[in-house]
Amino acid sequence: MSTNLPDQSVIVSIVIPCYNHGQYIQEALDSIDAQKINYPIEIIIVDDGSSDTDTLQKLDDLKQLNFTIIHQTNGGPGKARNTGIEIAVGKYILPLDADNKLNPDYINKAVPLLEKNKADIVYAAPVFFGDTSIKNRQFKVRPFDDLGLVTGNCADACAIFRKEVWVKNGGYDAFMPSYGFEDWDFWIAASKNNFVFHFINEKLYYYRIVQNSMIAAFDNKERTVIIHRYLAKKHADFFLEKLVKITYIRERYFYDLLRFPITPIIYLLYWMGILENTTKRAKKKYAHYEVVKND
Image (cartoon, rainbow, N blue to C red; front, top):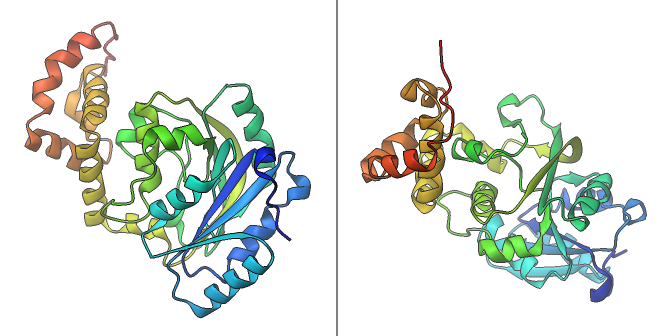
C-alpha cells in the first residue's frame, strides 16, 4: 500500500535511489511505517538504471501498488537523488538508500526542529547491521563542525533537510570522480551557504554493511586522495579558510595538521600555489582568535 498523499498535504518526501537492490527495498519500505510517523509523507523511488531482472520486477510490482517509480539511465546516487528531489513536493527531504532502513522516530524528532526554525538540516547516528564483522565500514557520525569538513564527512546522506538546501546547493554533484561521496560534497556546499545543522545524538536509522557497499571506496587510499583533491579544488575558498584558521589558532602548525588525514590536501593546496597567497588575509581575519599553546 502506498503512503503517497495529495501534494498539498506532504511534509516529508522520502527519496529512495535504487540500483539492483530489489532484494532489500521491501525492507526499506516496510521500515517506513506511516502509522507511526506523525507527519504526511510521500515516497519516491528512483531506479538508477538497474540491470537485475529481480529488481526490475520488484519495481514493477511496487508501481502496481501506486508507488512513484522513476526510471533513468545509470548515473549514480547523486543523480538519482536529484531526479527524485526535483519532483518532490514535501517541505523536507529525506534520502534513504534502498538497502537501509528507517526508524519512524527519525522524522518525528527532526520535523519539529525544522518547523521551529532551529535547523535547516537534521541528522542522526546509524545502527549498523548486515555484515557487521567488517569493522572498517562502520563510520562515526559527529556533531557538526565546519572545520571538520576539511578532514572528512560529518554525516551520512540519510538526513532530513529543507528542500531549499538542495535548491541553493545546486543539487548533489553527479559528476564526482567516485560514487559514494556526494553527501560530503553536499554538506560542504550547505555549510558554505550558511545553513544550520543539528545533530540528534540517537541511532535513528539502519545502515546495512555489505561487501560491495559505496563506503568500500574508503578502503582504497588512492581513491580517497582523488576525492580529497577534487573537493579541495572545487571548494578551494572553503578549504583554504578552514585550513588557515586551523593552522593560525594552533601554534604548532604542521604538527597539528598532520594529526589529521588530510596531508594530500595540504600538498595540493601548496601545489596550487594558493595557500600561501591567502595566509596574510586569513591571519588578519582571524586575528582575534587566541593562539592555543601546546606545551
